[in-house]
Length: 299
View 1 (tube, rainbow, N blue to C red):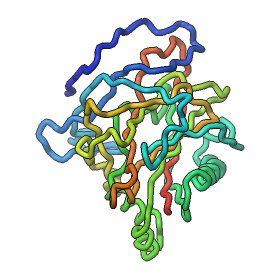
View 2: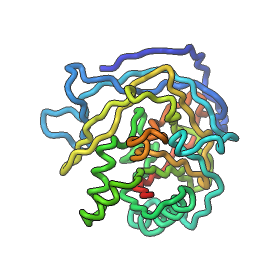
View 3: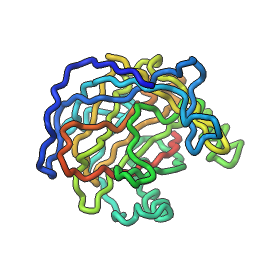
View 4: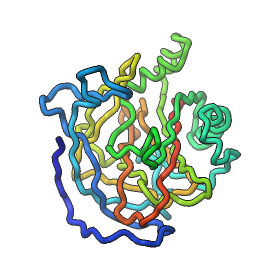
């Protein structure tokens, strides 16, 4: 069951017929937000097949129309500390499109590029642990498609649990937890022909526009452990953005957690994000393909 709220009026016109058209500029879109379970129980989501008799998730959804600002041509205005996202351009790579057909090749070839990028971009890093990646393709047959639900990848508890999970030396893990640690998602479009993203672009909300009360912890149930993500409740004060026509040499860094922000509030902690349906997507547009790599960043 879902509820629907419309906060602005949008005139929907027929999508362009030029399949090469790249939607750009300010727009509005319907975004799927969190709504609590009907029985007000603790919300949960099963990552894989749920046990018999259990739903995949027990919370509801809430559709709201939001305005989206295109950051194209203003990329340098945004920082990880202030906004929890960072747009990077002209990033060199030695990987090819076929690299991303193999998880082992991604780990062997692309992970090192991601680590180098993080070390050269974020000051004072002394340790990086890349712990997973997800490749999404907007084809009906793809196992992982763009997520069309506003969310934050980790709660503060889940971020600390990630440190303990991925640092094998328990003493080192506890020491690292006393310093600054972040989880950063490095988002890259994929294309065999280096074409810009046309469909299912990524929306992200500037951290300063999101109230703590907008975010709701959700149990993220894996087969052998329970993590936590956060659902995002709609708030008219939220300022949503997107980066039009992202190219394969561009990277969007999304900060999913920051212990410094949690401890003293001096920097932004996280960035809600979601794919969205752009009504301007042309007929015949190429489905979006992308990879997101998640890393623990210490320092």
